[in-house]
Structures are given as C-alpha cells and as structure tokens.
Length: 340
Figure 1 (cartoon, one colour):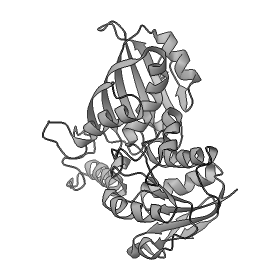
Figure 2 (cartoon, helix red, strand yellow):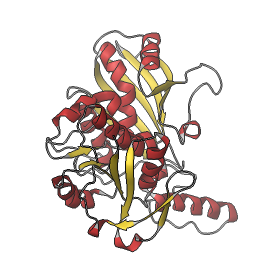
Figure 3 (cartoon, one colour):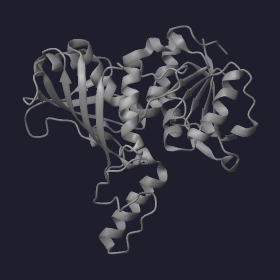
C-alpha cells in the first residue's frame, strides 16, 4: 500500500530534512507534495539524490486524497491549519509546540510510547520538543529497569534548533571574529559565536524558560507523570546536534553495567561508552544520523540509586524529522492510516 504525503514548511530546516528522511527510509509513498507560504511558490527543494519538488501554496492546496501531513511550520500555522487538514481525513503529524499538551492529542516518540497512537481523537499527533525526544529514548529502558524518580538535565543545544537564520548568524559572527569585523546580534540575545547562552525560548514567571518547562511536562506526558525533572537549557555554538548531561535518581537499585546493557538492547539507542580518550559521542558524530547516542554512563555516588550519562542526537532528525516519519510508519504498522 502507498500513501500520499504532504510536507508543510518544506523550505525550512526540518521540512527539508523530512523530505530527505522519507526517501532514506523508503517510506511507502505514492506521491509527496511540498507546501509552504505563497511567497515560496515555485521554489525547488531536493527530494532524493536526483529529484526536486516545486513548492506549492499551503493556502490553496486541495487536501482531498492526502493521507499524511508532516507539518513543521510553527505553532500559529499549526493551530490554524491542523484541525482543518485533519477534518479532511488526513492525519497531521505536527512538529510545533501547538498541540503537545492537548489531552486529546498523543505526544509520541515511537521507541517509547507508540501505543499512544491508538488514542488519536482529533486526527493530530504531536512531535515532542527536540531535546525531549532524545532524552526519553534513553530514559525509557532505564525507567523500565529501575523506575526513575528524578532527572536533572543540562542541555547544550545547537543553533539549528532555532532555524536557518540562526545558523547563518553563527556563521557570520564566527567569520566576523576572525577578520576583526563588528559582531552583529540578531537571532539571539547575545553573541553566539565562541559563547554559550543559558536562554532558549521565553522566560516564564517561575524563572524557567519555556524550553525548560517543555522538557519537564513532555517527559511526564510521554514516559511517566510521576517523574520529576528539572532542566537548564543552553544554546551553544554548534551547527547541528543537541547534547545533554543527565543525572538520574532511581527508585530501585541499578548499576552502570546494568544500565549499559539495557541501553545497548534498546531500540534507537547507540551506546558509545569507552573510558578512554575519545570514547564518547559528540555532535559531530551524530549529525546526519537517526540514533540517540549515549556515553559516559557512570554511578552517581551522591544519591542511593543514581546514574549520570551523556546523550547526543541530531536535533533535525531524531529531534524532529525522523521522529515524525517514524510516527507515520507506526500509524501504518497499527493500520491507523487509510491507503491512497
């Protein structure tokens, strides 16, 4: 069976990656349509090694016969368009934050909670925040093994998570530093080149940023509402790949070796954990890959049952595009999609 797929936001970082992932994973599509705003109509985007798609306007697209919408166009557009698209019978897999905390919308990482797809009520499935997605892939096998009580995580998030303009700003600022030109700040609150910024998304009254809040509530919705999580989210001068330093407190005893074995057996996880120079994963190695890499697995002696570890993943892929396509694959596996 084959399915007609539309990618909304196809000119953006994640939209382009969605098109690439559909081809790489040999998704069973009958047709793929690239959609964006009217100002992008006619723009060509790559689709596989030798093919291109011409952008069509979201505003005028006829959704009749389209089975899956992969949407990465921002929260406002998702709020407006996802219900309209779903009303035509097309299932929307949305990458924005617009629907994540809606009780009637499953928030899904297929390696963790694919069965939540059985509870689709609005025709919409939410993709989690990129930093949450890679975190819960690594937490799931450990939670199954020893039950997680509390998580403390510090993220080191690449500029691609803020979009193409943010990547361009890092490039321009880096070049400006080397040639002694003025460094211009636009996309970020401070210079990002050769710097780190402990601020992602808006500040809340609690003192958390919204990114930090998202990680806590999304982990609870996806994995277990009893898990307590606190995060510090930091933007770093890396183009692609989010890293996380994670400290986990468990209810039950667990050793580093038990954790290592459980992670090695877990879907979507690649353990790179040698206690030697270079025996760990960094963003460079994970760029372009779909796995969630876990390294530096070790005992935390400050609590009764604690571990510390290091998690790295490509935020454009497992944190967004790949996860969305995996959701579509899971819908097909569970016979929750109509055929074109």
